[in-house]
Image (cartoon, rainbow, N blue to C red; front, side):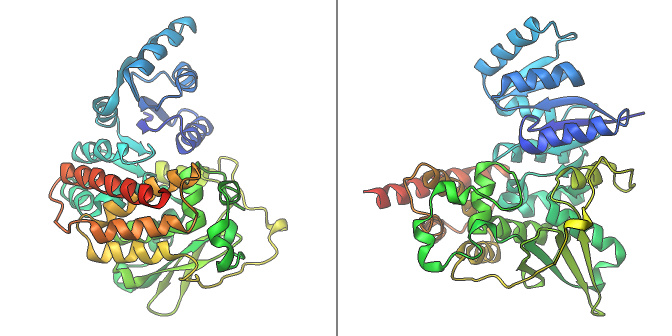
Length: 391
């Protein structure tokens, strides 16, 4: 019997690549539900090919348009079509789904993924916000409901693979690798004046706009430090970041005896996706392979803290806990959007985030509603800071 999947974010980059992996593993997986955003045409194409029973889109207008497009395409059977937060939650908790691929971009995927965990689903996690904003609540629910949480991000996926070589008590530290982004060699004095076009020119990966800017500021590594803390039960001082411009070594684990295990692979998200979907088994490659003939060197260098202050801010937010990691994520999203709209200089992203963290109230988060309220509060504060810097 094929494993049955629910995919959150089917029309996004990770969602599309997930469906590509499913196609390459013909007959092993069946998509029973999917949540798309507003890309109705692509969603209709995916539905015609994979025939999910339930589909959700962002809004009522998109749902109406999707129904019209499916009729024009003569897709049969037509799935049940929902929209909004309730819709994506229904997709995540679909009674037939064994595994939920959490790839919806942003905080919208948090509650749906949490509902899937409460329903006992295996989670293939590609949504950073789930653990950054609500790591303690989510990991408590994972343990309580005996759920498997498999990371899709290449760095955490690499660590997951390396950890299979030993027991957790034998681990000395985790080492997350970072490409260094487009500004690895840019002098600090010139960072303030870089343009969105320059920041979006990632040297190794093709990703969405926000995550590409987060790579340029290295906030993505800050998020990954927070995620690694919750995924692997490590202290923050056991998680390090090094710059590795080739992005060939996806991450490493150092054991107490001095041994270091590294996972290498091409810059292709289909590989960690396949690993997460088929774990604990390994199956034949879906076409991903490292081209050794093009590999000339593996270089590593330390992160320049003054040049990339977002990494420090992420560690500080995680250490203080409460609503601050959630606020970190929300403020970053608002600041990145302002930078892309040319309302904020590149260096202003970190400034806005730091100001928001200073202004947030440090009350503990007891449930998902508390997380969403903290997210909303941080966004308001971030917009105030952005407006202050525009005037």
